[in-house]
Length: 280
Image (tube, one colour):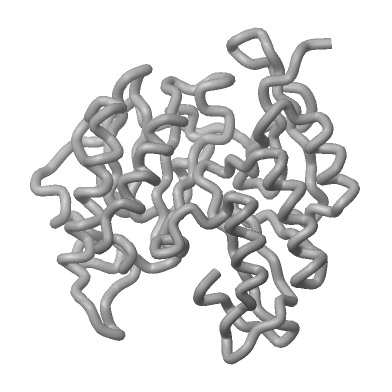
């Protein structure tokens, strides 16, 4: 937001969504913002965020009116850490399948990251990935993350290749923040400082402080969610909606917000899940 990417057609602004979660009110608002300040398009990204483009700027700075509109809609809870709130989570965690409910650990991780002034120095591409044990997001490249091994425990991940200790769900957010601080210490500063854990010597193995074997329960993979109705564990259902080319139109956004009971979830497959619906 405060350091947008400048393209030929104007500034590009990315809005970070923790675990892809956005309220139906905010989803409706962002369409209005895109039409008022940009080219009218809202793009879903593979990192479960939203992107606006074609935005007017002055020397790389967007207008205060745009910042105010997005703040009012709830997209800028921490302006100082806006670039580093990159937290991907299994989209249906706590609702359908998976070994653990990672919704609260994800929220707590975001709170801890935003509360630490030093972590604002993380690169805007630094990524936390929280997989609830089904293997739907844990296969992708990451900087730090977890994979659930049972309902109350996860194994920590450091870089794409290394595994840390198994900790409880309550311990995981603070442990990830501690690793992020160690990364900043190891990376140093300056133009040549690495942006990612994988760029450190031995892919960041030195951050762990010991050797931990990968728990066999983390060796799972799953396909993207099927489109349509998906039963939830609580008796409600979710609806997985395709978003062609990842471009959210006003009409599709209106359909989704009218159907939603409160929040929707942007997925890594550039689609949207509407959770917590009553069965017909």
